Length: 541
Ligand code: FAD
Image (spheres, rainbow, N blue to C red):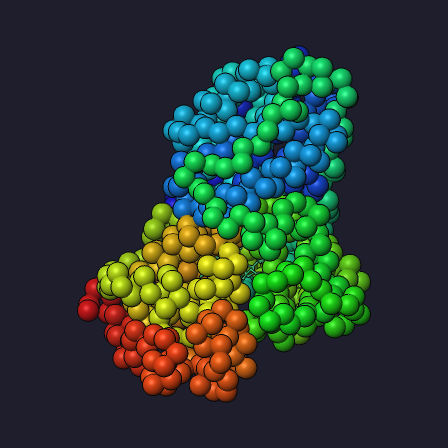
């Protein structure tokens, strides 16, 4: 962690020696899996301004990289969401006479030289991209910058993903934050001191001259198609995902509007009509305003459900905050926990926090616990237990509902994620890394490496600012709070569809047997004692 790759990347950008090129055929914006939007996109905005200045066309380039997706355990749903967004972007960019060129390159190792060869093939003068903060991506971009520099192409990489960029906030000792509350205080102070720097909308790209369509190479790119699949990432429920999570900026903005302006509507399935909203409502009653009281209710559709769009960068977190402030007529950003909006903005601060942690302590994404003292905690290796958890058949209704929600919808309510993750790591005593990788890989459409890692390490008590190991969730009392009437459980665990009343949270053995629902894998109290023992003395059984 002494010299994290982000620092190295910023240094290699400082060391760029290439003189500004004075002729060429294109400025290229390299879009990646986390910044899939046209509006409020800093690298794209800068590329567009540069192209106008240099009187050359702007080209958007995207490389599908199956080996990267496999290495990061991307789910087929997440990859399919990428393809669907590319299709929408292709159309929107074409309206501006900007070509979007999508290719596939299998080898991770040769990706940097592939990208630079492509830049040379279109006689590009400059390359623009937004920074991705994961270690592998940073290392890749360091090589790309060096190769581009050698080829006489000027690389520019900019911060865009977060409200406040990693590396900017530090403790009094000049160290990166590892505790959320003081991080958040400084985060707020920085934004409110200079809102223009952190919240201003990046300019929208200007249209290319229509003559670009006659260009011998760029012109052909308008008619090339976005691939419909990526080898090894077949999304089996593509159509269902497209209904629940429609692609594109308009869909993301609609999700945001729905959260800020409309009332929560209880749908039996929680699945049907995901954009369904009931009547337009006064701001006082909207989901956003109710967020303070409702956000931990897994049975309510009360959170924004924007995570797939934020993870893929289909909408910027800046836009989310601007819209939230506008709703309440606030001029300053706050995370006041007495208000729905304040609490919601705090969640966006958590998103920033976990990416800051990832950038400052890359080891967390390399399978290391942030708190090294827990590196030796002894885990169980019980394939049957793990399989039961992964398929939602643990015999603990709230855990099974959570997992099945993810398996059905590609998304899970935050409280449900915490309960399910804590159950895997503390009750089943199964390594959090398995949960981290499997949840990303198999089911989730909103996979974000930093938030997922942060969430798992929080639940496993190994992270930066985690739940202390001795505060182990009791899944049954969590269930009573998160799903008091059992609606969530009945929706996702049909075997329990006829059970009403308190039994829904922990069905008696006889009833479970009759309904074909499994009995609990472990006794919570015994499992809790085992977890306490093992965490107290890492290394011991
Ligand atoms: P809202 O409550 O509306 O929050 C708004 C946005 O804030 C979210 O869309 C998200 O971008 C951000 N956010 C909210 N809570 C958190 C949080 N705890 N940490 C970081 N960012 C947050 N979030 C992901 O986006 N991708 C993941 O892969 C992911 N994995 C997780 C794994 C575990 C074990 C846990 C406990 C949490 C994980 N989270 C992840 C965080 C959180 O559960 C989701 O962001 C949230 O449930 C998304 O629903 P929403 O968009 O309705 O959130």
